[in-house]
Image (cartoon, rainbow, N blue to C red):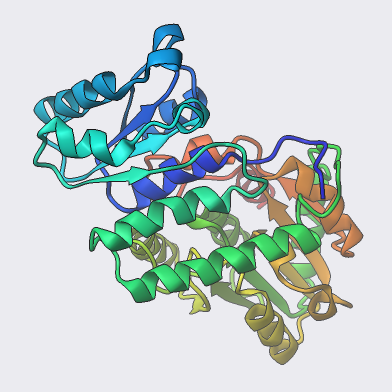
Length: 354
């Protein structure tokens, strides 16, 4: 399918994956403006992002010397544990040898070369391009590499079947009015009906999506609600640590959730969550994070209150029969660099109605 809407970049996916591997410095080998916004955001998460700032002359004569120079600067300035050199469209088109620059730079810091550009239809190519050299360097096991491949394929499948990639173009939407959805959610919860609150979130976004569950718990103490969260401790180093912190935050708020899936398994978690829904047989469900991972046959007949951070996810969720869909705007920038659960807008509205 050819998409008529912007799609996530494989270069940006490579940067985020480098961060999850506990890389300290990522060097973008390309123009200074490449992936500028995300590079700045990732600096909030402790990843130093440098650039070789390739320009006119280097486009013609190559940029090996600038890259070697930046590698030495990175080691001298930041004393990093790990470095990742990330390719861009320019460096890949002109045929730059990233590994050769690492070898010739004289640095002692462990470093990997990520040969990637933005010309892939799926951003998961950037993740794979990062994990493969990481496995060769011994940063992750071959078993973890294969597990990650499977998780990525399942996440991609969900997006193509029921997510923001299921149509050539989807108009962005802010979803339903949050205060009206909050009123309905509180009404059904306080009526004595059986409910389920599910966190099925992608990596660090769970720092805010978890707050939706806490807010419901605070607004409806003693209500018949089962809490479920994809916080099992598997995955890359940062992902495991994020899960530990979020579990701790939920427990401090008085919630001990059933654990079902890990933070990188959001796309592969749908059938397991669906089967658990069948076992519980709730009247309503609050689903925060990636609600569309759950196949529609499992949510049929359940009043679904879905919380997403994707404006282009509203229409597909409505098509799936989710009665109430709200969007947490600007969630991602608010969850980069944090180490504890962040209050959500929908959660704040729920609390205001107590």
